[in-house]
Amino acid sequence: MSLPLSLSPVFAAISALLVCSVATVGLAQQTAHPPKAAQRREVRIPIRDFSLTDQNGREFKFQSVKNKAILVAFAYTTCPDVCPLVTAAMRQVQQELSAPERAAVYLITVTTDPEVDEPKVLASYAKRYGIDPSNWSLLTGKEQSLREVWKNFGVKVHRKARGLIDHTSLTAVVDSAGTMRVAYLGTAPDPKLVLKDIRAVLIGRKASG
Amino acid sequence: MSMPIRLPSFALLLLFAVSCGRNERMDGLYAQRCLGCHGLSGRGDGPVAVSLPAPIPDFRETVERKSTGQIRRIIAQGRGIMPAFEPALQPSEITDMVQMVRFLSREGREVRWWEKFDVLVVAHCSVPWDIVLGYDEPAEEKSR
Image (cartoon, rainbow over all chains, first blue to last red; front, side, top):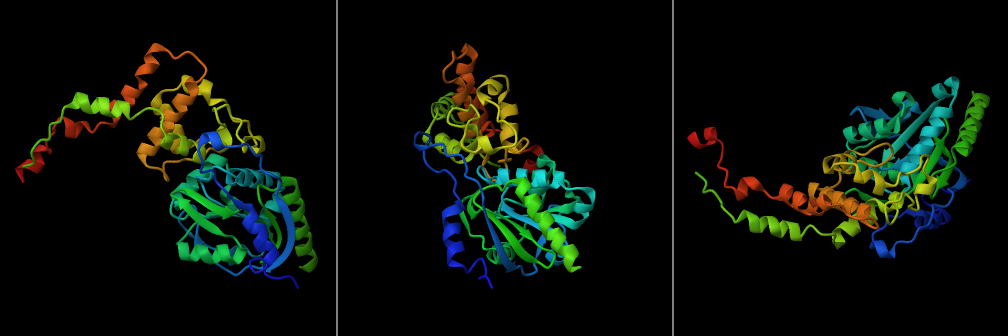
C-alpha cells in the first residue's frame, strides 16, 4: 500500500523542490529558465469529501461529482508563473473530450489564494480562458476550509504578498471512487498524457461498474 | 464647516512628476508580475512564454499605439490568459506597471516630443485636485 502523498518523504522532497516559485529579485538578476516538463507519478490517495464555493457563489460538494473521473488543479488567478499554463492545459483537455466523455469527466480548479480569488474573480478568470462551466468548477472558500483541501492533496501554500503565492503546482486525476490516481507536479502537464490517464480511469470505472 | 486646504499646486505637480521616473518599485513589480511572460524588455520572450499555448506579442510595438487608459485597462482587467491584476494590486501599483511598460517600450527607439510629457500627465492624474484646489463638501452636507 502506498503512503498518503502528503506523508510520503519522497513526495515532500519533490514538493519542496517543485514549489511554484515567483521571481522577486530585480530585473538585472533575472535569468530565463523555461519551465521543465511536469513529473508524473502514479499514486493511490483517498480524497476526503469537502465543500467549497464555486465561481457562481454556490456551494460545491466534492461528493456530488465523485462518480466521475475528476481532473483537479491548484492555481490562483494572478499567478504570473505556472498556473496559466496549467489552466490552459486543462482547457485543452476539456476541449478534446468527446461528448460521452464530457458527461463522465469533471474538472476542478481550487484556488491557492482565497484573499484575492473571490467567486466573481474566478468567474472572470473562467471567462477569459473560455472555460465551459458545464463540467468545470473553480473553487474558493474560507482559508480554513481550503487549508484542509490543500493538505488532503499534499499541496503546500505560502503567501508572499497580496496576489503572490508560492504553492505546490499539482494537477491530479482522481477516479470515480474519490482516489487520487495520478499526480503531475512541477508545471503544466501534457494534455495528451492527461487525456490518456483520464481515459484509463474511465475504462477502470466501466470495468468495475 | 471644513477649512479648504490650499497648497501650491504647481510645486506639488512638479514633486509628483519628479517621483514618476522609473524606480526600483516599478522594476520589482515588473519582475514579479510581468517578466515571466513578457521578458526583460517586453518582447514576449520570458521564460514562461515558450510554454504558453499562444505567442505573447511584443508589447513595445503595441504599447506605442495605445493610450494610458487602454494599457491600464489591460493590466487591471487582464486579457486572454494574462492575469487581471486589479483584485490584487493597489491603483498606484497599477499606475507603476503602466509607467514601466511605457518606459520599456521606449528603450532603443527615438522618443517622440509629446511622449516626454507623459510623466507630467501621470503626475497630473495622481494629484488629489479636490484637496489641492480646496473643493468644499457638497452644499447639502454644509446645510446639515
